[in-house]
Length: 470
Ligand code: SF4
Image (cartoon, rainbow, N blue to C red; front, side, top):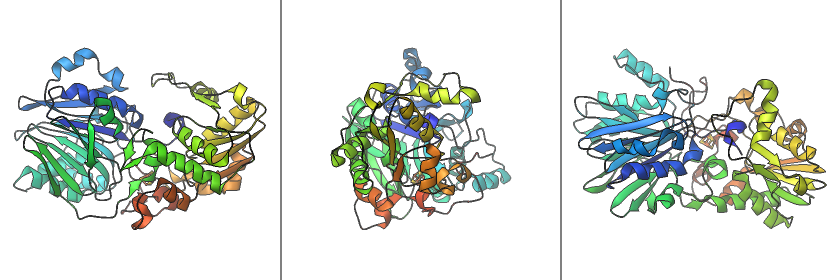
C-alpha cells in the first residue's frame, strides 16, 4: 500500500561502501533503490584524506543530491541514509548520517531501527553533562561511544552496543574503518556484498543489484563487522539470540526484488496470497492487488484460487512529497490522487481486493468505496497480515494502540466499517508457513509483536512507540 496514506511507515534505509574510488556516487544509487524505506530526508558522508565530509537534506534522494554535489564528495568509503522521521521527528538536524567531530577523530553514524531505552539513556547522559544536537535516538549511541573508557575504539563500540536496547542496524564510518552492527534480535535486515575488491552493506539486496554488487551474506544478529584496508573482521558484541526479524519486511516494506535473510520478497508475498486463498476463499470474478506491495500477493491468490488476476487499481507514481497536503475536507480526494480504480476492469465484477494490512481502516474504506463507485458489484477484502493489534517499538510507525482498528474491533466489525462484502486476514500460522523461514526457533525467527503483543525485548509500554526523544 502507499505508505504515506496508510499510517504504516518504515523508518530508514542504510547503505555503506568501503574501498571504491566512486564511493559517494555508488551510495547515491544504493540510496535511490532504498527510497521506499524513507522519503523525508537523505544524506551521504564520505571518508577522504583522513577526514569526513557530508551532504544531506530534506526530501527525496534525487532532490537532495545534484550532479555537482559529488564534486565535494571524493573518497573511497561512504555511508548513506534515507529517513522516514518518527523517532525524534522531522527536521534537518535529524537527517542522517549524523557527523560528529572531536579532537580524537570524526565519525559518521547511520541507523535503521528504534532504540527502546533511548529516553532513559539520554536522561542519564544529560545528567552526566552530555549535550545533544538532535532529537534523534541515534545520537545516544554516539554519546555512549564517546563516554566509554575502553582502551580501543572497537572496545568502546562494543560497550556502547551492549547498553542500547531495541532494534538497530548501524553503519559507523571513521577515517580508518567502516563498522557495521546489527542488534542481537536482528529486527531489521542487513546484508553484506562485494563489488570487485570493495565491500558493500545495505538494508536490502536490491541496492546491490543496482550497482552490480554480489551478495555475500547476512550480517548476523549481535555481530560487529569491522571493514578496513585489512579486509573484513567479524566480532560479537552480544551472545547469539533467536532471530526476530520484522514480519512486515516480508509483508509490506521490502522491495519485491530484494532477498531478506535469504528469502525473495516477491516469492514470499505470492505464497502469502496462495495461503490466503486456501484460508479465505471467495466467490468472485477477478482478483486485484493494492499497489505496490500487494500485487505479488494478488498474483498468488489468483493462481491458487483459479480466479483471474486483473489490474483493478493503478497507483499514480508522480504524487511527490511536495504535493500540497489536502485540507481535512479534501483528504478523501487525496487518496484518489494516489490511487485510481480501473473502471473498465472492475465495473460489473465481483472483486477480491488484496491488501497487505489494515492499520486505522480509513484507507481500506476509501479503496472499497472507490471500487464500488467504479462499478464493482461486490468487494471481498483479503489481508496478507494478521490483524495489527499492538504498536511497534522497533522502528515502524504503526500508530498508537488507540488508533489501531483491530485493537478495538472484531473482524466482522471491521468488515462493516470499511464497507466490504467480506473480510479475512491471514492467520499467524499461515503467515509463518507461507514466508517459509526455517522451523525450529520461536516463530521461525520472525517478530510478530504487532499481531500478538508479545515483544521480543523489554519495552516501555507507557511511552508512545518510536516516540520523540526530548
Ligand atoms: S512489532 Fe510488527 S512492525 Fe514492529 S518489528 Fe515486530 S513485526 Fe515488525
